[in-house]
Length: 146
Length: 458
Image 1 (spheres, one colour):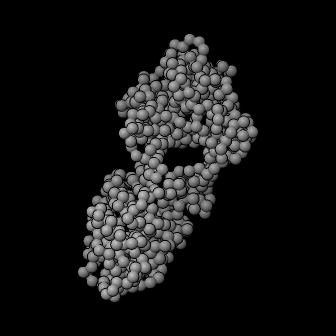
Image 2 (spheres, chains in turn cyan, brown):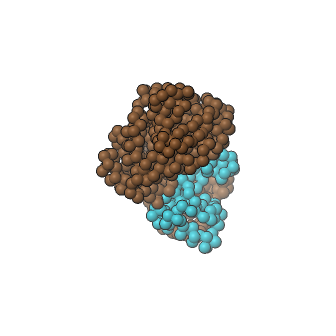
Image 3 (cartoon, one colour):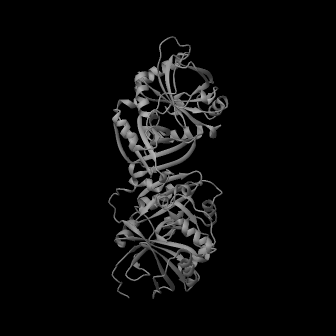
């Protein structure tokens, strides 16, 4: 079940340049900058009330974010909802035959996450997430670390 | 070569080897694995092998040394910095190849030399081959590369002498302080070839951390968030060590009763960890952290780790963006799309609206304090219809809450941002101003003031 909008993801060419608008002009507080070599992205998270803006810059040429930038240019990329049980929600989606990008949850910047396929949502890329502390409370150690 | 590097051991420089050995026996809850001397170097040592590395307490020895540089460097270090972490030894299977690779990467590393040590109690011998890195080329951190020639079992695990749960099981991480983070990153990433796992900045705490992995041990390099000229060229310092224990509480109790003062236990920065600091002379100049991992702490990158970082103090501004009001999603068939959002995500239409002054149909799907707004253009002559035909249906714009949209517009214009005049929003009792997407990295951003008085013409 959805608790709230966790973040809105925006793909940009250059995070430093994008922060001049989102951080300096709009005044959103930057609370985290992260380079994730394994995923080929650099991310900046800016606080937006109870939600966040996630600026994403690809650091490799061959991942989804890079292809999106190539094809569509900078702009809105995905919306992520904070859910109370990402495993259950994904299992329900699998059960109903919803088109998915991730068949299993995985670890992302926002915690335990999965992406639905935009085809399932009429063109919108939707991510579900559950922060790791909440996830760990809900699931046993064995599931968490598999 | 890079991927196979481990943290073979950590060397701590001490003045009085007997005192330090006794203190670390207490701290670790273990008896030493080895009490030895390096006849060629003129140094004496005590070793503790723990689960994933070993610790060497190193002191000056008596007698003549063939290779004086080791003793001279240690003496110089003790003079200048006092006791504390002296060096990190990077383990490799092939010291020659590793040294060659590092040299190719611009590191000043000596040719590998054979070394050996004798255990004074058992008479056992260990031999190795190591290559010293000139600290100047590694930004001041003293590093050497080592390949062991003796089998691993020659150095036995340090016998546990304390109660279960109260001994140091393994090393968790080492902390290096750096005044020049860019240089540190170049050294560890490009030149040493350690695996960079994280590069994170906490702007509000003016902190940047780099995590490099050597086997299952993290080298945490910590410094200021912004690169300052003043820091360039200042040496890095291996400052502290963090030890993994099974029970922080029991370990602290044991240490306190043995006369080693501890602070804590307190929650660590990494979620699910509990930490305590060991204080006083017993650590011999090493900033010492004890860390217990509970099952929730399996990932250091958890966002909850940012708790402190969220407390931003913002300078006063002409306007403040309060929150996300809604995200606009365009669709060619609002009923079909609403059905998808309901079926797949459980989001329900709470309200629909067709504004009198715009040919669109809207549906509000609340999600927490914000909502998703589905919009179906009813004419090709709207901005949203044009965007849909260019980029396809889907996410279109975001709407952010401000207290005073007119003040926001004035301030943005003063900063040179292209923004529309504030006007009545599509939802009743709102006033909105639209920022040109070109100013916002391709995103149509709308600033929205709630509870705005209705405009006169409605």
